[in-house]
Image (cartoon, rainbow, N blue to C red; front, side, top):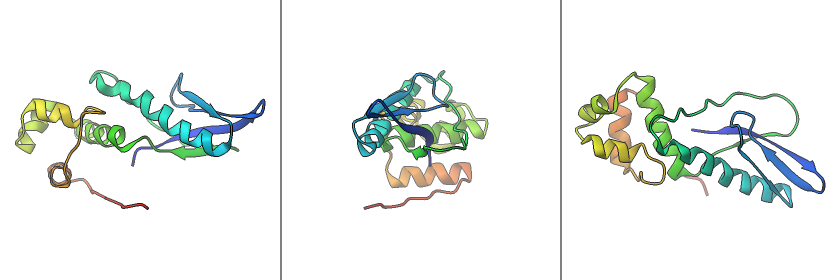
Length: 141
């Protein structure tokens, strides 16, 4: 799961949100709940910069102290970035990974691009098996 810690705190009658691992990524809200909702949107928009394959995805760090909460980006941003991260972790180029999956490099690029990726469960299982990685799918209501 991809997630980052946000610091949510009361500031002048509004709740401010900062992501210490993501310079320039911040938000706010009139209530704590609104700030949480806006934080998820801000995080997703920030990570959409990863449409550029040369953009390095920042690593999340554990922060201690008051007011830190974990925030996950929207699935259409998180899933392609998790695919890219898994490929890079195994030291593969897009061309090598596309060959391993039996897809074109253009198809793989689409799978790794936030906002363009919409892999099927079958595709996710193939990626998981090709990289010998654990695939976990949870349904949440």
